[in-house]
Length: 293
Image (cartoon, rainbow, N blue to C red):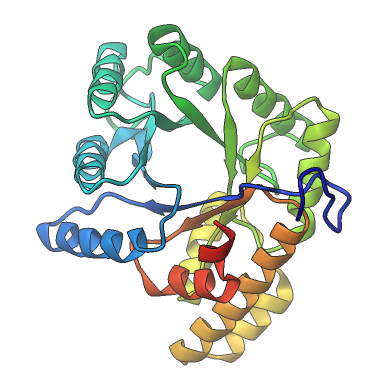
């Protein structure tokens, strides 16, 4: 598409779509070795960056830092997740300084949760307060990503309330957002339009979850509030224990979802890799993203 052209939705065409992969910190040496192998395989696709999750209440913060360091040492751009749950301010400040010294300039700022049973008192409660602190402490050094929810955060009182808190994160200094995964493309476009109407103008990148295991997908979706449409549930149920059919259906369905998102003006895709290569690489290949990126 040429400069200033429109796509099928009438939205401005995306000249420089961005693509990224998410990892979670491994808990064993074997897991760490596997993750570095997966990173090497996915790095060959030249994504814009990798992100590394933080765990509930910062429960994996040491693993996050170690994983971030390992990926950075391999020459990849990396975005650590950061939340305030259970962490005192001085620990957050020390972590920010460490990331600056490592040449890291992107963060994913989240509200997070206080670890259960610890009695910890968090310095922050909302993500916008963390963002405000990062901006006050480090200025514009970091490109700050935040989370958003096209199908509404499971703890939100209403759609309007969810937009309100999202906008507060933007006003605090967020540069772009990554959505919770979803399988209903209309949910994303409705959410994007609602954000524009509310004066939220940062890029909103769809989060993409490959489908490889129906039981795991159900569990994840119940926890995060992501809807699995009935037709998808019916198809997945019909395959029973046929994992090959589940994976092939998942790859085809998610590829179609991604095509519709990109055609409709989505500014990129963020893949929840689950520390695996093949599911996301198959979708990447189906979409020919190496050409697009």
